[in-house]
Length: 83
Image (cartoon, rainbow, N blue to C red; front, top):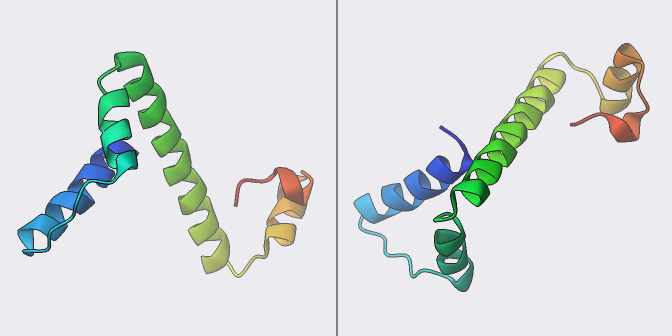
């Protein structure tokens, strides 16, 4: 499930628990923007990229590596590596 799906899923779970959430201006804006298929596709791809970055960061931490250590292993400057 991509970012857009998780965003809606998290909101739905709060509503299931009986918690109310008023839509923010951002919620309304995003809802409107997601009606555009091109925007929705870009938004989904961005969410997938974010998921990968979070997975890399979690695996790096599990391996006991710092960002600098991982960058050395990948032979890239530390500022260029994702997480």
